[in-house]
Image 1: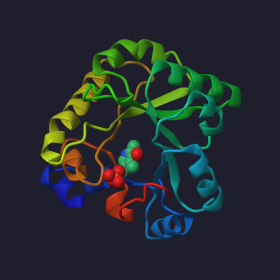
Image 2: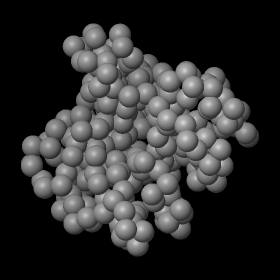
Image 3: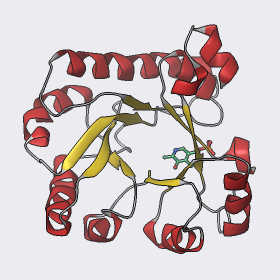
Length: 219
Ligand SMILES: *Cc1c(COP(=O)(O)O)cnc(C)c1O
């Protein structure tokens, strides 16, 4: 991470490592936190809750990074420091509603379907620009930036144009000077392409396999 940052003249401290801890057991997550991991991302609520409970008190921030069903929003709001995977207006509205009920502000990232893949959730780039006024009217959502999972590619260089496009989208939104909007965070890059993502401006990289090894499909 540091080498990639220095290659493009970025300060390494401005990039955070998020451990993607799906299917990783509590003991190994604890070890990672003790070794300095400060951010953990979970994809499924049921799997995350016992981990958050067992590791309470340790210096770690939990982020929700998976597909979030609307009926689970109530349990996620306030429990996760950030919801990175806000993929459409309906989900945003539910987070707004549940946050309002709980009397809290919820930091979020907007997930962008940067490769316009039919199989993936997330805002299409132009749809996101159009949805901005509605999103900003949801006063309990604290929008901190964008997140993306680019189309799968063997060669990380082929992810570069997608990462660049996400950065340019964030920059164009930031230039509109919309009140209440922060585009400070760009969550992009995983085990095989994080270096390229950092070169293109990532502030959070989400790493599973490269930290914890290959996942079994049925934990
Ligand atoms: C699992 C996961 C990652 C990490 O993927 P690796 O290739 O194992 O590093 C990153 N982001 C999301 C949303 C994930 O679900």
